[in-house]
Length: 342
Image (cartoon, one colour):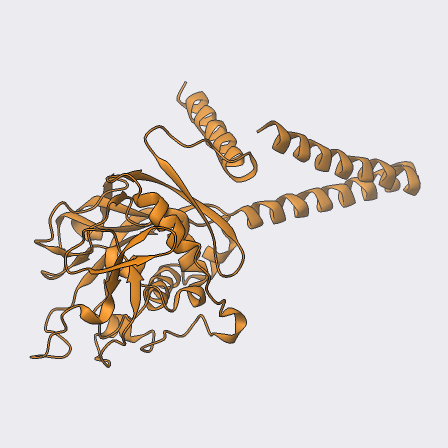
């Protein structure tokens, strides 16, 4: 009974994965609004939000679709725009942040009123945020609490220093996340896995011994800024998961943005050792490219072995590889039929 249940659950998860990656675009859930935009690199993306104020999603959509330049290969995505990537973790100081402008929700504290084409009503100037002058860097920097899988898919908590003397744009934040993710996956055999980063979410979690993080709610944000520093948002999640994933994969396209940094909950009262917390979760799932590569290798090797054995046993090379070619053709047609049905 338990074996059958486990196989059934695995089959259901596999079908859901195929539908999510190769099926048609899923319908918008009740109570949510879909925001579509085209990145500067040309990729078309979308995220679903729950609006806390009518029209907030459309304002975000107008902002994300504004004309902007694509940095492309001219920018080095592996180098932060303000500080060396290793400084994100070692606590060394850097220079003060440069003046940048980013979108924030209407009605946020300390916002600068402005109106743009497309209905944008909220603009937050990064330079207007107070910068400590007594100590630089501050004695206790703000920490982005980040959950990532370690030790056989066990999510564990890590702390990323996101002080404004190190993070001046979403590009720097993405590079810090990449450094953390590649650090926990530094073992060579982990590159052979079919699983990889599939989405990034704002979550509430409970930290136990040995940094184990039990994800309690997703998406979720702190209700008050008492322990966390963040820009209040009229959307939930404050930043979409597809936006975050694209930011992680293409940080060079977000050098002038601050949406994610301003809206991410940053703990300002020291590290979290145990108890409830808020942050982001680097969720892993099957990587489409690796799955297709494995299927191609299996069918190619299987057809080659079949053709070789057939030719050796029956002394018929033409017939052997004719059947092998038929197997490969059938596999392609079956995959196309499965994709059309999902």
